[in-house]
Length: 216
Image 1: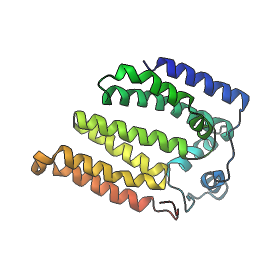
Image 2: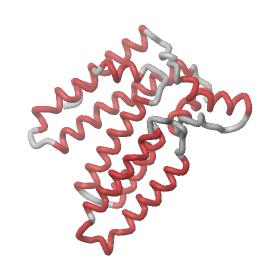
Image 3: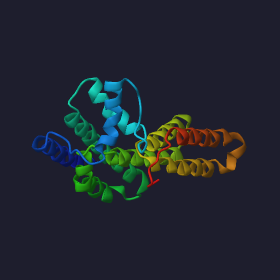
Image 4: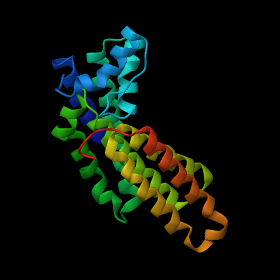
């Protein structure tokens, strides 16, 4: 059911990459690339004071391989865009009773969204952040359906990546804590450890993602 949207999304993204091989260099792009610049030229690891770790790390990898960053980074983000289509399809399948009515329109709307196409082709954190947000929604849904240990680990990893994508992502740890507490409310004496793990992980993540970004 996601195949039509994946085909449309792939055609649009390939066409965009062919017409514009290099990604869009935004005013905020230097804040993400300064990490790679300092690592290669000054041999020190340092994040911009307004940015969290995930996107600067992802943007540094092409320079280390080495690959043309202005070409490979948009391709990476377009691949995340295709992955987002699958996640939206999964969420539709899990959330709606009559999911067959909605899955093709919703996934196609995701595939052709011009805002997502633009942000995927721009060296900024927005497309990564949207992907991670959808991943948190999927991880939370799967854990609510069957709260196994593996799905709990998946939820923790998704929340950690969400916090690493943008500074405000750490706020979704509140969702994780509330979700675990709600699911295990009747078995709190035996399952309190999972809530404690999310709280501790949230505190540690908050400490390592401290930024000076006013939007947070």
